[in-house]
Length: 229
Image (cartoon, rainbow, N blue to C red; front, side, top):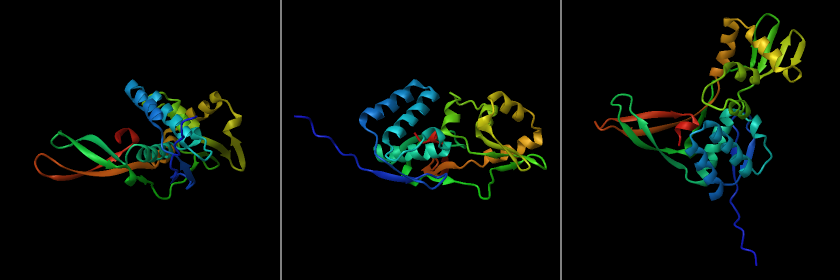
């Protein structure tokens, strides 16, 4: 006689980038073990690939994880961790004044996605030439394999179209070398306009309060998934 199977509860979240509703189940003990092993390895690439595997395993609705924006991945995994383990994460923070460390609790259910208003992904480079950009995807970040940011690679992967007047060039039809040559031909002013777009990438943040040894109540903003766990 086979052992009974445990039915997992189904939860849902809304992707910050496009408002799409995604249904998912909590990850299992076996899957959590994969995450712990990746974190113990100290390799950022291993951790990112494990995030991808867990999201793929737990997602009920079809979704291409490699095509999700980086902040979608962060928000998705934080929500997944909250429903799978606990919505409270205990972390250590360092006070900027007394340099002491304090343990604080982050309520993962209350993390926010902070977006800058009036951001356009249509970047004009000259009177006629411009690019259409997308936010960095999970795929483009995982390709880096480390915390070091390769600006050229990230930018190349975020360009979806190049246009010259009415003529539109789909980057899928061009080689990496051709795209790199285009990016490297930009001047400083043009690169600055593109950099402003990347600086507008939505951020996952949470605010925590703590009391210093001097009895002062302070508030700190936690930003980025690596600082939540």
